Image (tube, rainbow, N blue to C red; front, side, top):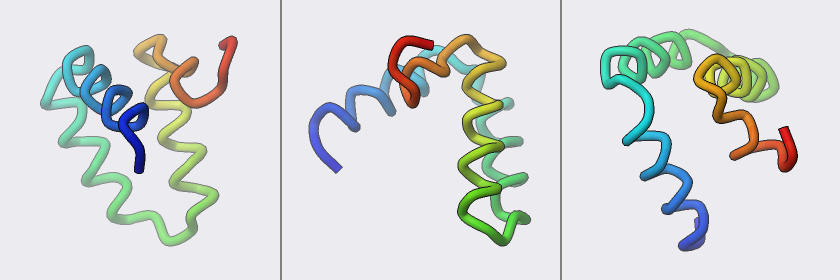
Amino acid sequence: MNTRSVAKIKYVLRHIPSDALKEHVEKMQTIAFAGDIRKASEDFLEHYNLGGLIRVGK
């Protein structure tokens, strides 16, 4: 992890309600495969219009 990653994480934590983040973490703990976790996380960020943090230009 680099300083850019930390900045992105701080941005997400400030712009998504804590209840939603907690719910997302609980959901991620039930998923077994990394690819499924990434897809669910991308969808979660897209829901909050933060998909550009993962995919540049979106």
